[in-house]
Image (cartoon, rainbow, N blue to C red):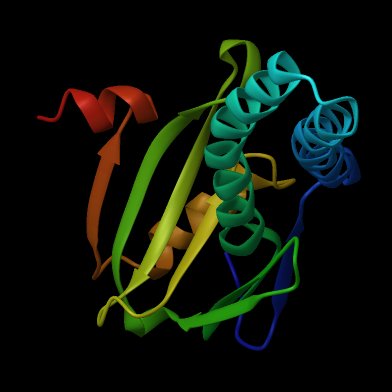
Length: 169
């Protein structure tokens, strides 16, 4: 429960940020290293391996960039609005009355680990805030979101991302 004028902050743990940047560096550095090595050594097998790895890595890099720009690593909730700042520093703010839809779903990570995410969409669809279960106090944050967005349309899906994409309905 938020009182008028009070603010509550939810922060992602530091290990999540380190984990993101380490993975991003390895995904970018390894295929680059393979390609440079293959070109300098004039190795056809190295070029093929580097290109194949890059084809796999590019979607992961794009997903990582999307994650880094969209998912809030620091979320501030007040009685008037919710604001989120991503890992890369992009800040998005939505007033509670401007939120038109709240989507909750499950995402799968490495090793089959599953965690909840919630996305808050503006009524116009121009702005959105993504909230991840890695935020400290995520359950309390969801309670506040549910309390403040009673007017918004809700969608809940417990299926994984792959099942939502390939097995709709």
